[in-house]
Length: 110
Length: 113
Image 1 (cartoon, rainbow over the protein chains, first blue to last red):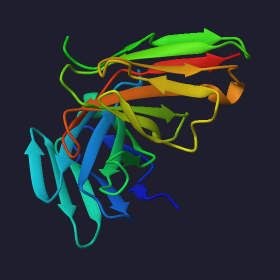
Image 2 (image 1 turned 180 degrees about the vertical axis):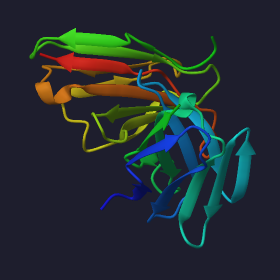
Image 3 (image 1 turned 180 degrees about the horizontal axis):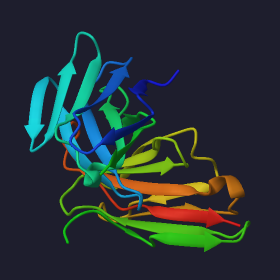
Image 4 (image 1 turned 120 degrees about the vertical axis):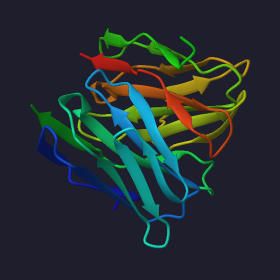
C-alpha cells in the first residue's frame, strides 16, 4: 500500500468546471505538497501545507490533519490547467524526503 | 534563471554504458534530492544530501548507482552498466531547509536501448 493515495487517477472536465482532486496519506507528516507536472516532465510546486487552507489564483488547497486528507480545487478550469497533479508529503522521521502519490492526470476540454 | 537546473534534459544510451547526470540546485539551498519517475507513476525517492553529506539512500539505489555532491553545491548521479529498467525520468529537487518548499528541476529523461 502506498503511503500517499490520490483520486481520481484520471479526470476529464469541460472548460469552466470546478475540479477537485483528493489525497489521503497514512503516515505522520510535517508538510503536504501539491505539485503540477506538465508533459515535458518538469515539476512545479503549487502549495505547501501543514494546516488549514491556501489559495493562489484559481487554485485552492485544503488539509485536514486529523483525517489525513487534502484536496486541491481548481475553479473555472481552463485547458492550460491540463497536467498531472501530484500530492506529496514530507515525513519527519525519514530525513524529510518526499513520498509521492501516483498523480492525477487532468484534461480540460475547451 | 535561478531555478534548479538539470543536464542533460534527454539521454539515450546503449545498455551497458555508463551515464552521468548533473543537478545544479538553487544557490544556498542545503538540501538536494534525487528522484526517479517511471511512466504513469509518481516519483520515487533515491537519495538526498544535506550540504555535501549524503544522508539517506533508498534501497532502489543499487550498487550501480552513485551520487555525489562534493562541494555542497551541484550534484551528480551516475549509473554504471545501464539496464533497460533504468529508463526513467530522473528528477532533482532542492530546498533551503527541511520542511520548507522544495523546487524541482526539469528532469533528465533516460532511455536505455
